[in-house]
Image 1 (cartoon, rainbow, N blue to C red):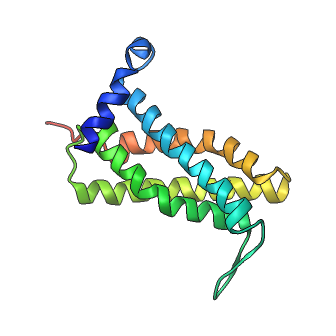
Image 2 (spheres, one colour):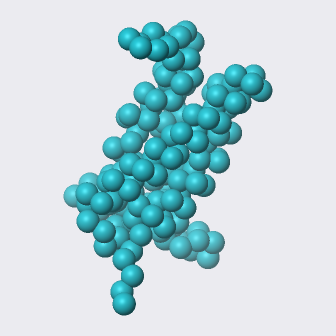
Image 3 (cartoon, helix red, strand yellow):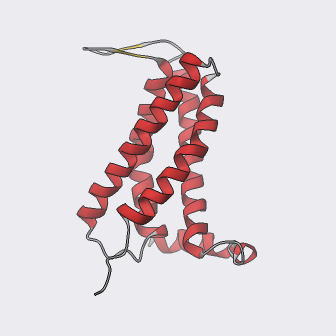
Length: 160
């Protein structure tokens, strides 16, 4: 199974970090880091090459190229992130799959909105280059994402 293969690879690199963090946090860092790196790469590719730094005309509104790149990267990384979180990081969660998916979607939307607002501020007000702004923004969003996933989307049910 793919998830067991990924767990074996991640856990192989865990021993030097054992004293620094629990295995769940290490797995989150590995999986989340990989998915975040994919997202940053996709963002850069979409911004610079697919949308070519131009506005994206949609039927009812127009998106800035950095916003369009963010949303497109999200569409690709959302299912990957859910799979990794559910099967690798928080595999001991006792919540049902549908509930996990719904809660993951809520936390992902929170992260996406936070990401989008921060990106707009950094690019449109502070005039950061979009790829640099996205890297800075990622640090903020990853922290919020980890906490919301751990304590909401994939929490373990309390036993009375």
